[in-house]
Length: 117
Figure 1 (spheres, rainbow, N blue to C red):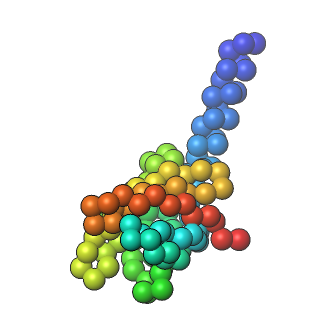
Figure 2: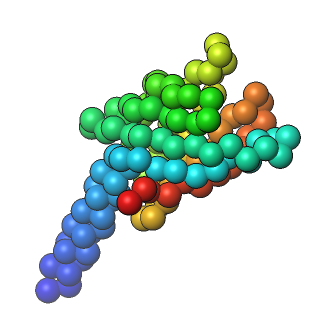
Figure 3: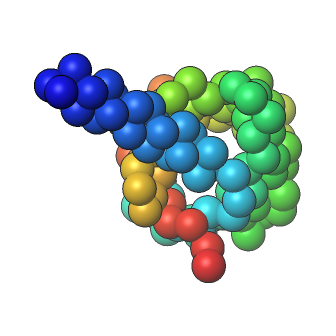
């Protein structure tokens, strides 16, 4: 009986992990505070195909594609290119948000985006 409960608990954990991984697809919005103190509203529209992450990133400066995107479990990474400069992102998926770190010209900027409803 103990083995049954252990197996059931592990199965539930795996199901939650897969649900979280699938949850990144869609539109997410938030604000990046740059190292010089500027607030930049951003939104990301993610598409997931297995472990491949694609989509677009939008800001007041326009829309750019998400390149080299990967998602493994609750961790993801991608880059966006703006005016010839690459901005790598890394992040973690939570139940109601995505926490991201952005390499902003050698300085790390941490921010959170929430899923649009």
